[in-house]
Amino acid sequence: MEMLFLLISTMFLLVFLSLIFYQSRLRHKNLPPSPRALPIIGHLHLLKHPMHRTLYRLFQKHGPIIILRLGSRPVIIVSSSSAAEECFTKNDIIFANRPKLLLGKYVAYNHTTVVQAPYGDHWRNLRRICAIEMFSTHRLNKLASIRKDEIKRLMVNLTRNSLQGFSKVELKSKFRELTFNIMIRMIAGKRYYGDEVSDEEEARQFRQILKETASYGGVSNPGDFLPILNWLDGGKFKRTVIGYAKRIDAFFQGLIDEHRRKKANLESMNNTMIDHLLSLQESEPEYYTDEIIKGLIQVMIFAGTDTTSVTIEWAMSNLLNHPKMLKKTRDEIDKQAGEKCLLDEYHLSKLPYLQNIISETLRLYPSAPLLVPHMSSTVGGYDVPRGTMLLVNAWAIHRDPTIWDDANIFKPERFDSGEADRTNKLMPFGLGRRSCPGAGLAQRVVGLALGSLIQCFEWKRVSEKEIDMFEDKGITMPKAEPLEAMCKSRPIMKTIPSSHI
Image (cartoon, helix red, strand yellow):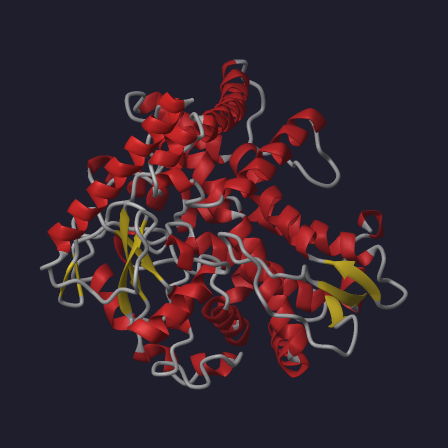
């Protein structure tokens, strides 16, 4: 017992001395302002959920560029549009790397996915695959029928209880199931929620993986910031992450093997992402390895589903709190699509007010309020230590009163007045070379889903009280209170055959 106490004391002393040495090296550098730090933990004690609001309060007190020490990691927080633009334009290459965290090592195939890979040839090849083979206009158009069918299924599901009048519906789970079914069908041609689930056990495994994924969320390992904690817990968290990573890998490998087997047996194939990537593997097997394909699947599911569903939920919440805007959007859709034609993706470019609603939702409620962490060098004339993590508080920038009139007010019309052109517009999908490659897909899904909900139903709040618009903790900024609303089918739902309802 005495030996263990001595060992722990020695470890703490070494950490403390290394931090003193680290601070002495930085003492004479031109660093951004920083709040008072505590020994060893630095500023970790200041961080409270929701993180973007905590960092916003620090911005108000210390300025738009500050440096925090989270344990042993220096982290720059940028909360101004000009500094963010500098990071992602002038210094874009300098900040093109990602911090290496435990989850990235074991879950993201040793930091080799398009989100986690360091800047270089490998990342450029992954980005090219995303731009040309996965998220190009041609590829998205080929998969448009899947998105349309899943959204139609949601409309039918809502109609079953709303034919005779208004009925109450819980929307959060429905939006989440919609986005996951869309993504899985695009990737593997399967449904894991609702009806027509071909393999219940496989669907159950997938839902369990998602449940585990939600418990990790971003940079949740304290040992990434205080390495001694990895030793103190005996490697328990690491072993948990490794087990989780193995289950994810086995699941995705099973999907790939199933499609490869069907192809070898000349069975009928779907026009899925896996089928397309396997065809590319035949021509370039040395690059389109199974691991690369699994990494692409993982990014599509983990980065492109919850982010989309929470955006739809925030947008509907905003419209329920602004009935006149809801009516204006419906009138625009009715005028463009007519009373007998269900909305389709080709209509979206002709619906500017709907697009304004989405843009304003993304401004006030970005699904990644701190974007994805970057790595470092110089910001706003300050000397920034090499290897410093960079977090951009997009939530704060989107609500900056020096940029936006009535910054905290939901006002879609601002995008007609050119107000957004005074800044580098919006950054809900990031900026620069490491911006989200799936932004176009997200815009299509949000636009068609939101537009269809407005076209097909009358909506009102459950009570006279406004919808609560406060956010809960979570990497994708979910609503604190899941959205519930009253809906009633509109006549256009009669255009869907009764056998579907």
